[in-house]
Image (cartoon, rainbow, N blue to C red; front, side, top):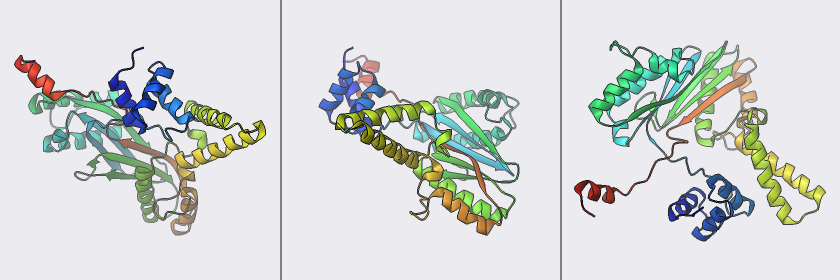
Length: 308
């Protein structure tokens, strides 16, 4: 497979590794971007995989709460200019409220009646595309509920209440004081926005991701030339550190910078007056997983004008 300059640049942008090493990694992996990231990591050249496809798309994340239930949605647009448009903001806010009854079903949400129009959410977005002149996409939604407790929401980089770039939902089950529980939920939501955990505990992690991480670490340890029994201990030690970094309960609470999140929740039980269980969290960051196609704007203008 031909390794293009664009591929090398993409790998360099996502890992921070030098151009020559990136080119070699792509050559060794036949142009497979994820395999190239792993190749670099096993050689200590890229400490973390900054996914090349996590390029920010535009639009807004919206949240809405109603009692012990909350919903989050992501609606994408082509430019940040549209995200600052009041009409677009009102649409996303309304969709977030409707999402409370969609139960995480994006198809159902798209088919729901949009308030005051006589047509669906999807049709409303189609009309907005015609008026604003830019493509829009109802991308994803999730809901969180508790039987007894609170569901807290948080928006980071808010453009107005309930709308912004990162949306968090946190579900806490407890029979205790709801005001104290709500305060803890808000702090946990802010922590999740900053620390980006992948799951509550190691058991809830995607096991394919865990296996891939272990394979990378094992390859790194093998190259160190350590005896087998020492190498195995090294692998287990690094996996424990990995779990501490990516699972919420094991992370250091950003609010105080020293307490583990699990301990912070346990300590909060004194104020709440009852046991607390963190049952679920959702984190939507605008544009994650969407690959934007880079274009040469000057070339596009020249082509449109019929010049070279």
